[in-house]
Amino acid sequence: MSDDFNMSMRKFLKQVGVTSQQAIEDAMRNADSSGKSFTAKAVITIEGFGLEHVVTGTIKGRD
Image (cartoon, rainbow, N blue to C red):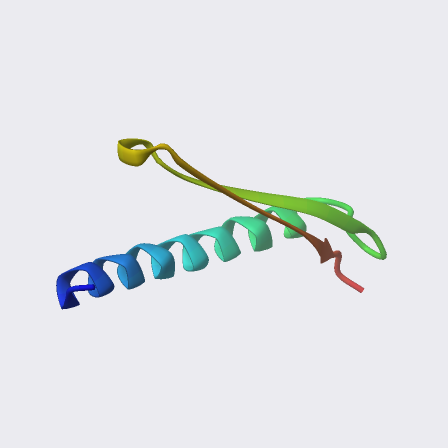
């Protein structure tokens, strides 16, 4: 893969990670999350070649 491809992918994934973490932290601050666990799902799509990648997991609330 080319350097331009690698850099553009890393930039996109960094943006996804940083903005997602900020959104989750904001939601947790505004919710009664103490002692609870939440199911999370992230979906990444690239319409140009029909990619849909789904990641699921659990996020524990604040103690």
